[in-house]
Length: 75
Image 1: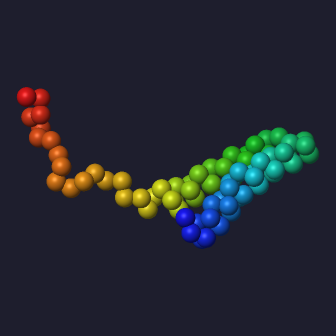
Image 2: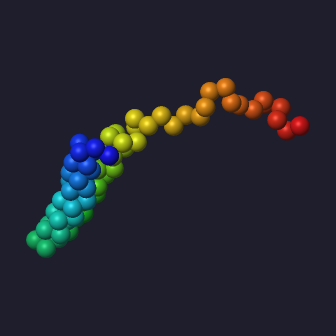
Image 3: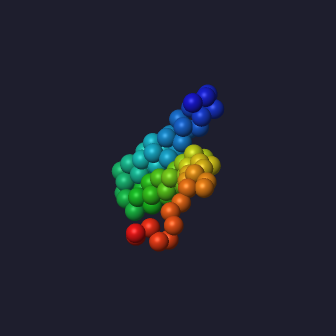
């Protein structure tokens, strides 16, 4: 993992977990628990989408070429 990936990972954890959690706590203590929950869910959900986009989507997770069974493999 290079420096760019480390910085992106730290910023993702900060933006997707810590900041929405603090916003949830802040809005809840101010008497707006629904707003806090919405901010937390939106932040966490966008973090999951970003993680998918940045690290999971570029992965090539196909099987090897030329390997396959025949349709009559029950013999």
